[in-house]
Image: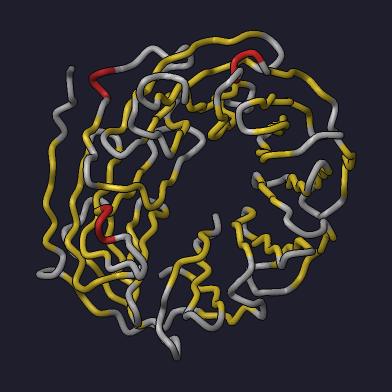
Length: 352
């Protein structure tokens, strides 16, 4: 097995960091911390157990949609899919429904992409995947590929989201086996590969390639699931924290040591994998979370935000004035803002 030899640069950031005096823009968000939150482009979706709200980055309610109890939701930057029981709803960015219907069977979960959405129906080991357009019209359905297997996840990829990847768990083998399939929507299965017993927890479409990430390595495949062995990266002991994937070109994947991500998080090290770079950072103090945005690494401590460029060997520090201190990064918006919890309230923080 060939593993890519990537130059590793160790950044001892505790030796090189500079304090900035400029104040961060912080806005209190008038929503409870115990809801479900998800970034929706430059806005936030929030589910309170009965209703999904769309909030601006200043906390104002743009729209709301009653969906009922025990609902789930997913979104792209422009569309939203909601489900509860056997009911499915597709909304545009303004909260207007383009499709609402009872599908007549249990909905396990759903995802939405640029031009299609998918919904997994049935039960764990007797499920089928229905692919629909944004008006709810069914384009394709796949059941045979998941016979007696558990669908773990799926997502759309390609320039216009015209391809689909799926992850399933084969539980009938002597050892658990994760299998990756790809499909061209409405046409045919383009490939299948076994990913082994290490559970894959993330699949990214980056620079026209699929990246699969498990607890041991990050592997790279083309559209037809041919593995590019020279692009494999060993990540044993590291867990993906965040990623930034542009429409074209190389993305950036940010990792932290797995043993530093217990609750509460005490992150002291970070690792940024970007193109042929594998960059290690040592943080000035323990942090509760970190993200990557516009090729900068941001780490959030109790009362400080640290910022480092991917080609620099030092952090700048910015005071983060929250009365109870930062406890969690809840979401990252696409406009350079993060939603932060202090354990009691939520705040929108503009990154420096």
